[in-house]
Image 1 (cartoon, rainbow, N blue to C red):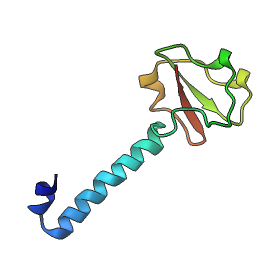
Image 2: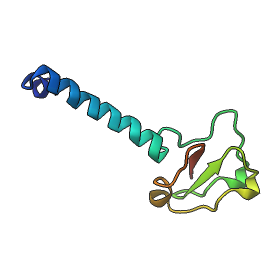
Image 3: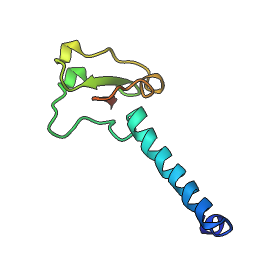
Image 4: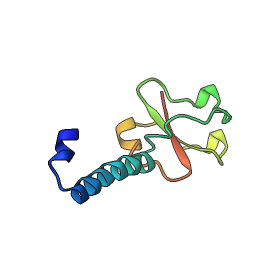
Length: 89
């Protein structure tokens, strides 16, 4: 990768690197990629953890019985709103 940036004008290399880094940050924020497990101090009752191969969007401010249903991880990972996290079974 250093050769890639070395062949570019300095300003263009800086802009390219900034785009790559911001893309990584956007993925984590939008998809829940960086928040895919409950916080260590957040208790999720065993009966509410999704089964293997499935996921559940989990809201910290809702009671367990008020959480959305378990579903397909590929679909749910694109729908995690701010303030919620994706639990993977």
